[in-house]
Image 1 (cartoon, rainbow, N blue to C red):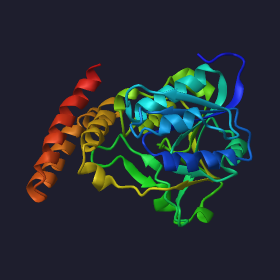
Image 2: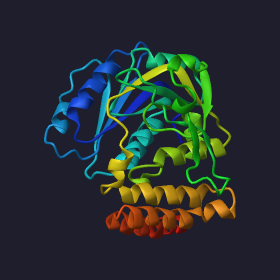
Image 3: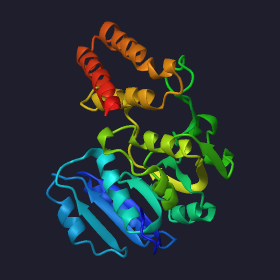
Image 4: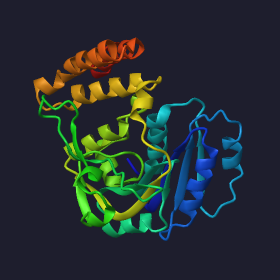
Length: 300
């Protein structure tokens, strides 16, 4: 439970071995037109030898709290740590960011003008292309949908100017998510066990299950610095977490027995694609391991 002497706003940034991006991210936050009461940076056990020193000697204009994790707990663990810290310190609003998104100078101001209990800023690429992938519909009731994300904001609206001032979304990324402490009082903290991927989806689904809608705020602008690379993730060690956590989301939040059992069909279909068609047997092994581990997570 948060303390009763609520302060107004804390920002949580998680970083790992990306000092150049982190420096620029903090510079953008220093230029916000809305006052920031605390900037909490979770250094997720960076191994570059320079991130910790930079944070410990920070001389910028923001009040900074640094948490140096002793081990890399993944993005999920980092956000769990940062959000828990901000909540326990009594901040009324918590804005959550990765280090590879840069906030427009009026981003926080635009969010606070709306002040909905759960909100997201809307992401562009550096070239101005709208790339907000939060889902307008995240369907966990129809077993025939291979992907529960039915339509992203950037699928429906090709440009930011075409969007309404706010639009309801059903999942989020922890790249510009704003949450009010009263929501955390009810739903708790993100789950660190995801490590990477889907911890933010889980959190959004829990918020919506508790009765809170989520608004995307058109005029709150974030600039994404790195491209989405799902295929690259599948071809790396990240594949295990991507599949495991997708399966777990279905096990945990599926609205009927068919959706809750869909991971078995998804696993079979994925193994056929990656094994028979693409001859990627390493990915097949990761899918099999992911399914087993997702079922084990459900038992906990």
